[in-house]
Length: 184
Image (cartoon, rainbow, N blue to C red; front, top):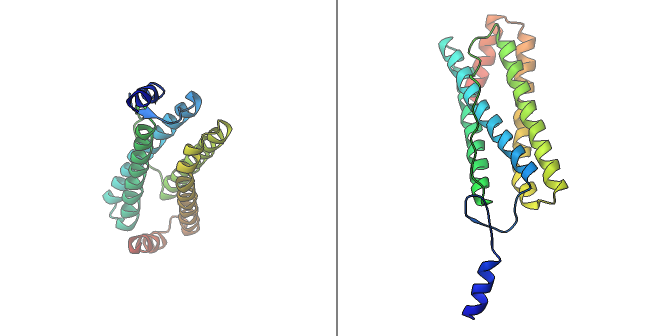
């Protein structure tokens, strides 16, 4: 019995972190996962910067919405990092660009945020496609609820952008939208 266990231990694959792994990750998939982790971290910092921009203008509803988005993006980053660890990988953190801190209008800011969400969705779709192509079911299953949440987030931003566009930078309309966001 002990002899069988010794033989079995020699067959265990180890990931770069030294942790046992049942299925190694495709290097291309892993690199795309690292890129996506960077995007999530950047969104976290960018949304925090936007939160501050709205706080400085006493638009508490917009501010709380973006603070929540910032926290949500950090939660996503945690999930990805923990997934890497569970798969025996080393978590590689890449440099982040500085967030944009000056905006010409709320519409520009929300448009930028919508585009950032759309880019995150595209990145997730690419990860999903690579996972399926490399027969990495673990990654597909991991990504399923994240893709669903991302699509919801993109839809929310599209909704807010539509309201902001319709408001046409009218202060009273912006305050109504701010009040609606404050209730959420």
